[in-house]
Image (cartoon, rainbow, N blue to C red; front, side):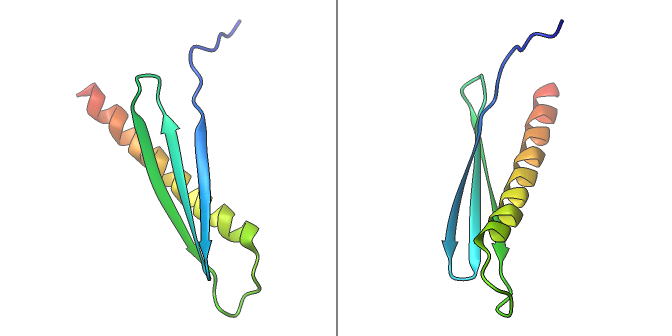
Length: 79
């Protein structure tokens, strides 16, 4: 039987300005530390406005950056 030891909650927030979407990702770890990352997307001027697409791209980039920071943090803690 599996037991959950901890749970992490990741927050994503989006800001749009013109053709640019910015995503900020934040995770609070059980030790009280926080890891924050950013991701961006830019809509080509010829494309129709679709905020959801910009959010998905920017969000994915922010989460990818968050993952890389967490891997680096874990690696540094193992040293």
